[in-house]
Image (cartoon, rainbow, N blue to C red):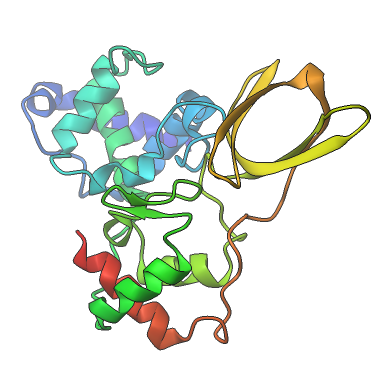
Length: 259
């Protein structure tokens, strides 16, 4: 893989003045660029953004597979963000060469979440199904719960297969900052209270979580009688009996209509 980086760098350096003038990635048609960018990403960026670019629980770095779904995102804008960093955040400026930065852009393009296929259900029926099955924990356009991820743009960020799988097998892939935890805290006398929720942030001494009543709560680790990282999502599994394929299609059509 080092040879790939070396060969690609040599090629790119030969036209570095041309590269700098570009607003569109000049390496986008070269499959070696994404491979080399992946090596660079894992060595330089994964400590904050994770090896799969989806982020790490407890670190306020975004899921980079979603950046292309944001309005106004371009190759040049991502290039400049990598180069200059993000003021007021933990994202620093980087001293990568122009070819290396374009390789990183190519890699991020290669792992970007793809939009869903067109859904052909009944959006009106889907709205009612969403309200009865999903709205307690998920929100759309500012309305609904906050225990689970905001679904306002989800159909532009995830494939149809991924969306269906997230409903049928919610514990298979759990989004960053929605991992389930439970703690036991001391109550009055010798009583104990178990609190479940999703982990929002954590450091060496404390945790912050949103409990199942959708209240943000903070605890000092030293005060906890127990702290467990659960392997299963708090989201229930919706089988075909709980939610038919047609009903799920209706819900996804409703979400698609909200874009």
